[in-house]
Length: 148
Picture 1 (tube, rainbow, N blue to C red):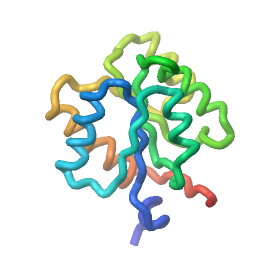
Picture 2 (cartoon, one colour):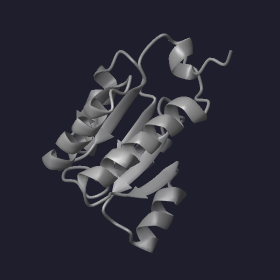
Picture 3 (cartoon, rainbow, N blue to C red):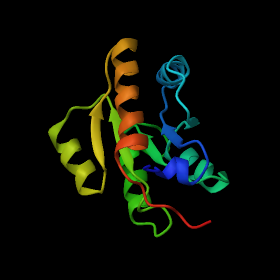
């Protein structure tokens, strides 16, 4: 029998979503609820808020979904800060954004993004994307077990 990180830790995987668009946050929450995924979603509205949320969490996030264009602190600035942090550098970060700009994609990977996904334009696409992201990060990959 194979045990995955979330099973080993006896907790639901925690995804932190950093997204300034309320509609996108609501749609992602709906996609998660409709599929009855065994996980928790925590939202932050921008990079600065994400840092505050990360500091307040009792459970270490399994994965971060990170938008790029946001007020206060944008996604690339947050990505750079987290990947240079001894505390957060191993947390997988998936860029989830509307930008398909090649320079931005190269910059995100250069800063340590684990993947880069252009947001679908409709709910069905977002729902399918969430299914893929969820199963990849909870069932396919082996995440490092973090010390308490």
